[in-house]
Image (tube, rainbow over the protein chains, first blue to last red):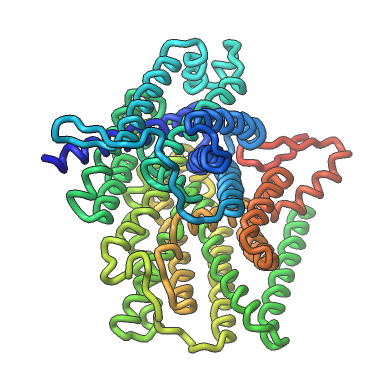
Length: 286
Length: 334
């Protein structure tokens, strides 16, 4: 019983992070048609900027988190303009561009701070006790922030003008441009949102687990898995896909060996790709 | 017509002479007293050129893969495990490894033909990660993360025989790839890549051609894999990881996937230049990324397309202009 509750809580926290990262990844994929393999590296750099500001400069952790989100968001603007826009709809060169970005970011961190594993101090230390369940307060915070952001993102995309513009560009970029939507501006806003949420989730994850220059690789794969599971262009799908992935990742290592659990997850993803390439809820991209 | 064919003939002869000269030069290098370490590096370059070229062969039929190292891993691990634990001679286990790779490739190719384009790329990515996970699950045989070491060597500790062996493998594999590309089969694959529906409409069995292409390409990757296993004699989780697959993909793209020489130039540049600047230690990835950025922004057709790019630049004064198409390929329009 205890194990089940712990696993569920862990699964929910993991899901919140997966959904946040996958939402950014899938936003970029549907609006610009790019597989941003550098999304994991941006997630990593967000965590490291928070670390540098709070531990290195001794700022308030909340202020440093906010600054990190703003800085990485601004970096997203740069990335969209100078790295992605010149290579739109050229998938192979896009991937090479992302690899170059990953190499530069990872090496920059390795050169300045070293490749050792570090830990970000918790934003809210302590343990919450509800009845006989005790949960790390940090995890509850992560889940809450994740949930609030998800609601905000859903509102932004479904209800506001810019969100509607994003959906229009994702459906048909040419048609959207003909209606007077500035596709480049939409893409820039999407990239900024994606990078900012990646930085936030990176910082939150770094307090729960640890951080190293290669922490982004794993989360990137999870984001791709969630995107494949849910399909492109459906926010509800990403919520469901993220929950499935998070709970699978929390329960499988307890039920079987970690390696077998990973194999099962990958088999599920490959089967979905082969049987239903558009994912469980989305539409086919090309 | 006559003029055109004589130009192509001249081009063909020039390229054959150039390739022959490079091969003869490489063959003579050890007799000129090549030190051990550069020889070691060159053997690595030969092996990775085979893999990158096989990836380009797969790309010909429109199947961009970022999990190609997994097929190398299947060959390498099969041969390595048989040779180490059963004590068989590498000369027997190496063909078995290649056959195993081809068998797995043909088997997985059948379901893989269901998906095209970016979805195929995703499937290949997760196939690559899946092979690593299988490696973890059977860690009793494969050693898991730490991998298997002291695999029987092919020729002992002197590097010269390996150099010639890998050079011969390279020439044979490139020869096969060249012949395939310029045969009827290669043309069929290019047709499938351009438009699967048009190709099907003129009687090409699209699925079978894609299965064939994946099988042949992975078989060649398996050849490189077994050569790797019995030269380095150590296989770990990192050897054939996702990064390796991505690296091979980058070698091909930087060299220019349109050209036969593309993967060769790309691999050589991206291994040898960072190798020369080894003294920079942890800054070496910056060099690698710098090469990628230069090629991306200045050479839309890759390193191998540089010559053509220059020709076009000087021909621009005449009444032609170049238009960049979807895949970064420049086309001349009157």
